[in-house]
Image (tube, rainbow, N blue to C red):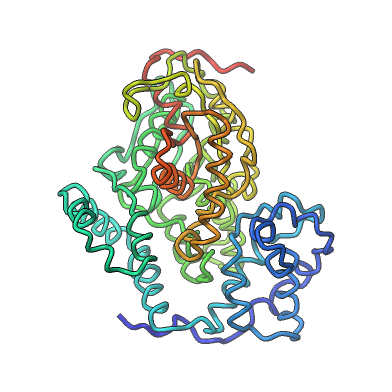
Amino acid sequence: MSSAPFKTVCRSRLKELDYSVLQQCMHCGLCLPTCPTYDATRMERHSPRGRIALMRAIADGELEVTKTFAEEMNFCLGCLACMSACPAGVNYATLFEQARAEAEDSGVLSAPGRNWIRALALRWLFMDLRRLRRVGRALRLYQRSGAQALVRRSGVLKLLPRRFREIEAMTPDIQPQFSAGRIAPVTPAAGRKRYRVAMLTGCAQDLLFSDVNRDTVEVLARNGCEVIAPPEQSCCGSIYAHSGESSLARELARRQIDLFPPDQFDAIISNAGGCGSHLKHFGQLLAGDPAYQRRAAIWDGKVKDVHEWLVEIGFQVPSGMVELGRENPQPTAADRVVTYHESCHLCHGQKITSEPRQLLRAIPDLKLVELRESSWCCGSAGIYNLTQPKMAGELLERKLACIRSTGAGIVATANPGCLLQIINGARQQQLRLRVVHPVTLLAEAYRRNETPAAAPG
């Protein structure tokens, strides 16, 4: 596999961007208290308005794209908290993605090792989920055979650089079955069919949390949805859009639209906050594409986060309780207390905040305790915890401190990156904590209640 850069510089994305988007920022500073990197460093360039000033300088021809600029764009979490705080409605998401693409186009970060890793991950692995699943099966065999435990006990890892040891410790547990082994291509509605929906099973979600996909389909079916979930799906493309690879993001968007023609479904369901935020903007991504722009516009209106959709259709309130005892053989009162960490892209990107809480509050004998700084980033941010481990670690410690203060035994969150980040953090700190998707808690309650009551209102 070649380690050559992906692209050659042919244009400036920031110079070609609608200049009014850059002009929107009034430099008022209301975004500063919401920005994790600015809060940690108090450096203007690490703030949203500081980064926008750099982007605008490039668009004005006053600044060249440099390695420092590219590193600054990669230091940004892309959490979009600034968009929630901004009174002028600055579209930082578009600016952020264009700036990262500009940095990649320029080649200022090009290096043999980096180019090879990006080619392996982005061009080879995630573009074909059959390959990703093969890698997942190999990793699962390594974990379940005892080889991983043997390697860890042997002390051989101590010979590796510290960063490699840290990454190895973060290796996620691969599910015993992927989504295609847990979910039928067509799941009929339980009772009267009210809706026909598509279920997006994702890539990381498929390998690491296929049980969440199964729970999602079960919950949808119990609420009158016929669920279509083809076994062979593609990555949604969010990792590409956030990594400056917009052409590959567009290719994957086209694949999704071809697989799930939007006019054939009442809704297209995502249960991952980061993926859902990207999936709702195919119209913008494919603007000007004569073969896809009309369908992309329809697609955007059909994509629904699972919590959003359930509240919209009036989900059934269960009378059963959630499961206890799997992680905690001797359950305590804390195991009936749940707190909710908000995925950045579900909260700030999709503006979905109340719906997951409505689901959690509807579960009998489960007490929801609000989490201080619930919408503050946990440090996962896609692959940020791999590329910026120091900042990611500081954010994770801050998040865990807030979680500990609630006294909750359950943390609910709706994004695979957040789930994995908090699971790893809880393991490192030896916390007695269950980290779970809200839909899983609802599915567990439904399993104890075959005839749920109708939701109020």
